[in-house]
Length: 218
Image 1 (spheres, rainbow, N blue to C red):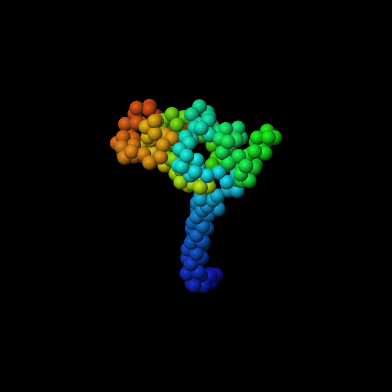
Image 2 (image 1 turned 120 degrees about the horizontal axis):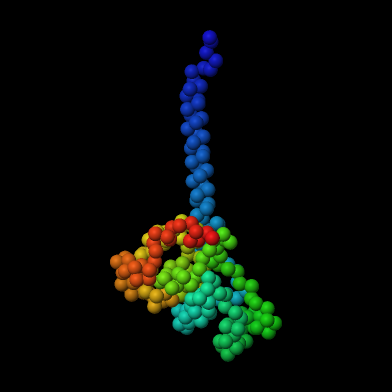
């Protein structure tokens, strides 16, 4: 029987298969890069807000504790977006005629909440509880970064599952004394791995459960 295909087709087939595999690999790599890019993760992207609130000024310069504004962070799943009344507890006396703060005064007069754009917003299928993380020694800085150095709030972490699993897989790297949860510039011992392991035992953290799917997906 006569040969149907020319012998050169062997080489052509190999090149085609190899080229196809390279195209698939390149497509997967490109998808991964896009998925990790600020376009998707919004890392370092500053959102437009009704008022350009500066954590650097309020936290670092004025020394205001996180819990003064985020009142529910120790007792509920949500840290809470500050009510206008909290803002006005100071700004009814300080900068009370500032044009920049007019949206705050308008909100207070009308009783209409300010429409803040959430910077750290997890998908609806992810369960996250602020209070349990605070109670187990995970500091604000671990997720939100050095907010005391941010003139405008932005993400410093992707909030993607792989990032969460880095901490859940080795909590001793992030855990700190509960008394230091709301602090920045921590003492050296708090960052020590051995001290972290001690705290994991002291706080009764069940590391064998932290990687179970139901912990975050309920």
